[in-house]
Amino acid sequence: MYTRCVLRPFQLSEDQKEKLLAAASNAPPTSPGLLTVADGLRGTLPRGFAHDLSRSLLGRGPQVFASARNAFQRWDQFDLGWVRVMNPTAHVALGELVAVEAHTACLWSANVSRIDEVIDGPTRFGFLYTTTVFHVEEGQERFVLDYDPVTEEVSYLLEAISRPRHMLARIGYPISRAMQHRFARDSHARMAISVSRRSATPPTRDRDTS
Image 1 (spheres, rainbow, N blue to C red):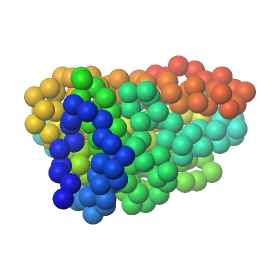
Image 2: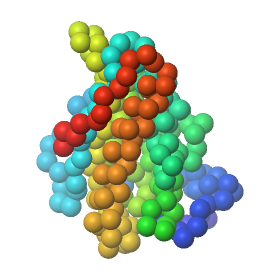
Image 3: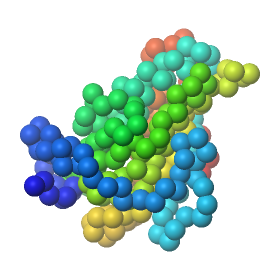
Image 4: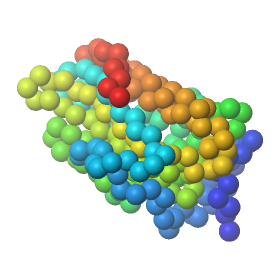
């Protein structure tokens, strides 16, 4: 049986990654349902949970929205150098596992979440996932693209609630929070670059609304 140790001093091998995904296939969620993909935070956060919310303007026009949507489906928002999706062939679909690999503080982490909600419409696209027991944190995160047909603005919204689950994540909580903030900044920047390469409308810098 695959162990639930998600922090290691070395990167997982391809065989270990396959075993991790197989072990996580029926893994239960570790977080209560505190977010919805459409509306975000609902109710009051339980003790110990942090809440992060940021939004960036990617550009304007239907072409920008289409480019951003394609970027989401390629998992570009996770393609950060120090972070990546371990199973990039996964689809943005209900019930799909998303395994995210990160290299921080000299440690490798492999964190598996499951997509619980998807929104796919002419002016909105995105998903929400919830952590499983194969994750250093417990919580939920939503990634949403919005297209305003009046202003034609295309924005990228990232919202997360989390608290540390793994012992090392609790001990190194300030570092964990710093990495979460770094992920948000880098993810917004990565999406801006990805969209600008595929559309004529230049993106603007991300703005934090948390």
